[in-house]
Image 1 (cartoon, rainbow, N blue to C red):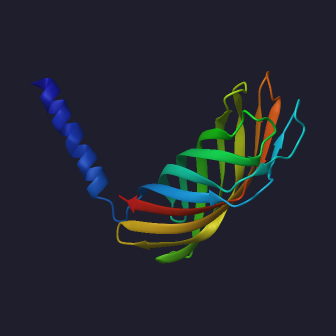
Image 2: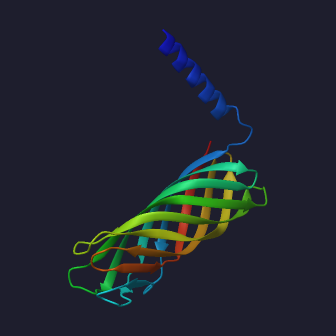
Image 3: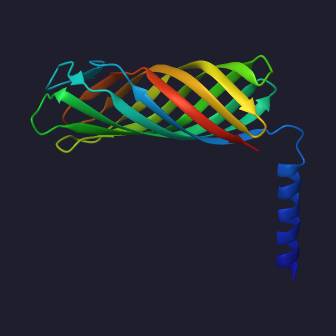
Length: 189
């Protein structure tokens, strides 16, 4: 009986927190983007080359919480498959990049159509068939317009940054200079 009462009180508190807000403070969303840059990747030892990179797609799931009237702090999970037309090795055709990280976004003015500016910092891994697993960090800048109506929002962001992945095997390091164009759709609650 005590467990049921505690559970009911917890559910009531959670519902009043979620539905009792004046403005939604949380958001969850998905995004799809492209990395249009070609040749913005460096393979370290033993290759020491800048391979020709194809355009690739980026997928992202994210959550943010509004901490001040114009500032949101959140987290994201990102996935990308990078393909090459000129390979450093005949056995490497693509690389899988997975990241998880945090972002900070400021928005101005406080109207449905506004500009968002901020940055991101994440950690992740690069995997290819004949490589040692590379791990590293990814950080950069986010900017673009956003529109929110009711409980839904859309944004078009340009994300540009730098990523450095290292390993004790082959290759020793991979550097990415990757601008991304991201279309984001999110739900406010």
